[in-house]
Each structure stands twice: as structure tokens, then as C-alpha cells.
Image 1 (cartoon, rainbow, N blue to C red):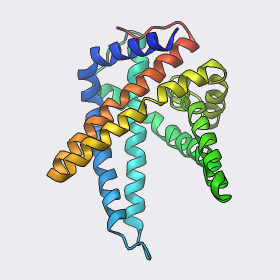
Image 2 (spheres, rainbow, N blue to C red):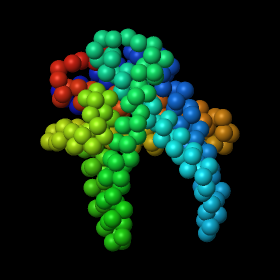
Image 3 (cartoon, rainbow, N blue to C red):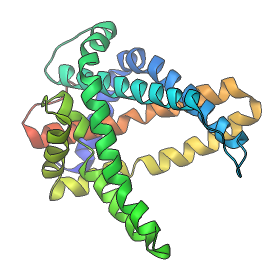
Length: 238
């Protein structure tokens, strides 16, 4: 399947299921964005010479990771169920997604460390940090299917990382990178509108960033479509 056809089908799915997607993900996205904004404000107001980050900040970070894991688990399970023609309420999907949160959390930590390692290592050699960044971005593309491996394939975190890496070889890797590049224009537009919203106040900034985070879910849907096309011939319901 061509990349254009894949993105078109993903867009149709996003448009046709936008109400249930909103009901399922917007509450979680609202919490996630609110926590991110609070943490960002804490970092801006911290003393750069002697930053103070205590237990409360660590606890908030853990809550953020948990909320993100629940969001990804629920979204992935929703995509899997719809691809099989099943319909469940948002509450049922959230309840069914909870057992996937611990393995997703572990898989996210392991894959995150693997992705960040190259850029952190190469940063020690000055200008070579750019090489590390390229390697990290490539690893990010190769590990983009870890969540699907955990939820759809029911694999353990380490198995999911290995399977994602092997699955995304060859042409799949290039298509994955192309899909992930959609984050670039989305981030640029989000930055512009967020800057404008910041001048109005926190409530509008929260709404704007949550809205763009919701739109960003389209990338996850496109990746899932790419995953399903290369896994087995099961179509997302139009």
C-alpha cells in the first residue's frame, strides 16, 4: 500500500470515529497536558544555579507516565477492537486497557532509554551530538510499534521491543519515519497557537495544547494502519 493511501485511510478512520476518540482520550489528554504545563512552569521558575526538585515532582512525573500509559493502552485497544469490527463503550475500553498499563510502562522506560542513549553518549564528544540525534531518531522509528506489540500481540516489554525492531525493518522503517515526520508541522502549528494562547491565560493554553495533542493522535492511527497492513490483511473499519 502506498503511503498516500495509508494516510487517507487513517484520516477517514480518524474523521469517522472522532466522537468516540474524543470521549475516550480527551479526559486523559487534559490531565496529561495540565501536568506537563505544571512541570514546565516549575522548571521555568526554578533557580538555574540550584534547582530544587523533590518528592512531589517525582510523584507528579510518575502520575504523568501512568496517565500516558493508560492513554496509549486505551487508544491501541480501541484501534484493535474497531479493526475487528467490535464496538465497546469508552468505559469498557478503559477498564479493559488497565492490565496493559504495567507492561506498557516498562516497555516505555526500556525503549525510551534505548532511544536517548545515542544522543546522550555522542553529546560527550561535542559536535558529534548531531550523529547521536540521527541515530536516536532512527531508533525511535524502529521502536514505534512497541505499544502495538504489547497490546495487540500480548508480548512482554522486552519481547515487544525485539519484535518492534524486527517488524520495522526495510521499507516499513522508511514509511514509519515518513509518518512520524507529521509531528514536525503539527508541532510548529501547536507552538504558534500555544504562544498566542499563553498571552490570554492558562485556561486557553490548556485547551489549545490539549486540542493539538488530540490531533496528534492521528499519527498513532496512521502507524497502527501501517502495522496492520504489514502484519495481516485486516482493514480498519471505514
